[in-house]
Length: 520
View 1 (cartoon, rainbow, N blue to C red):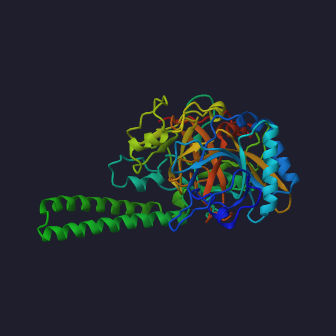
View 2 (cartoon, helix red, strand yellow; view 1 turned 135 degrees about the horizontal axis):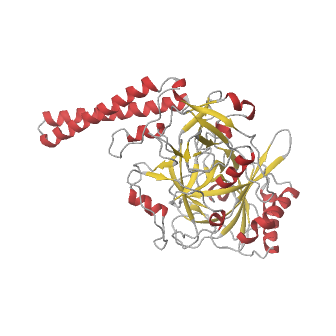
View 3 (cartoon, rainbow, N blue to C red; view 1 turned 45 degrees about the vertical axis):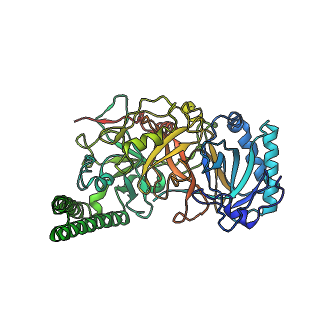
């Protein structure tokens, strides 16, 4: 049994393979075996959802609250309490132990105090008849991921040369946004809603995102939201310029091959194709520079509702989720029936359809009616019932219950992850008063090779399952660094959409729903 703090080597290498590679502070369990030999490498690990385990039945009932009280009594400055499986990346089908994973502020807890805290937490688990779960404490910080002109573009066919460049300026979900007064707080448009009973939206079309990337509560009536910050737009234009440079190189290369009579016929055909592609991209670049470069041309709408950000707030004491959302009324000149597909996520062309299906359904025993959409648009309808978020019916490659989810964010793009069936708790500390605790829907990376599920700037993205049902609004996550520019998130946090819709109605929206259809 490990009754002493970890060595420096163990602290640094223990979580090798995780996105942020957090530092281990203390843990219970058996002794660590250090890598040996001249070519020894740390064993890479990965996070997995818990699935079936007795801890799921007692975690939210009383165990989590007693755990937090115990940590507070020991003056542990904890930032999150997560329950995950941590397995070996090179043994994806091997069973992985369930870990009570506690995050603490960097350099706030000594190794000796950490060991004492870890064993007291394990004693608490035993009181609840949980005897097969170890406790691990790591340094980790919870962060929030916030980062009248032409109509938004219509999504194009996969064969269209400019498909990648069009996507950020279409009404598909994942629209990059920022507030006019805070262009540095970039984020992502989450999902559209409408009000009332019917599906046809004759009134206003509303877009839901996070408060952090839209507006403060005091500015609601006057705040304008843009579809892209200037920094984002400049980066976007640079990517088009790079593509033109690549096409010009192909043109010159094929001209040389023709001159050298080396594969002349093939080179002639490739030359014509490259020239056509280059001209298409140049034409598109000119359009974006003339029609979208001015900040006023990227105005998407204005904020109509943005409650103050709060955590652990709810009219129902059993919920206590993060409340970080805002509602934007979309300018009717930007989106109408001609370019609106409802709530839809563009699956893009970077992940082949067959590979996408394997990612979303890792176990062939899963029964599902999913068909990859021919136009790449995964159309969203309704929300994931809470009981299916807690007790998923699908299974992963290890045979454990697991809900596979995806999101499109303006920073990390389309990513696929695994939703944990046991919620996490995050603690937020403030300079002038103590702290607040909130409950979070936790999303883990798909595997050890996929990288983090989200990054800075993805705040406001909607997280959905393969059937197109909305699960949560992305608000942040936990990782090694406090700095958003350095942070790699091990776990992404989200607030359930059903909770947000209920809170919207309590704040005055009339029967908000997630299935808007614009009348022609």
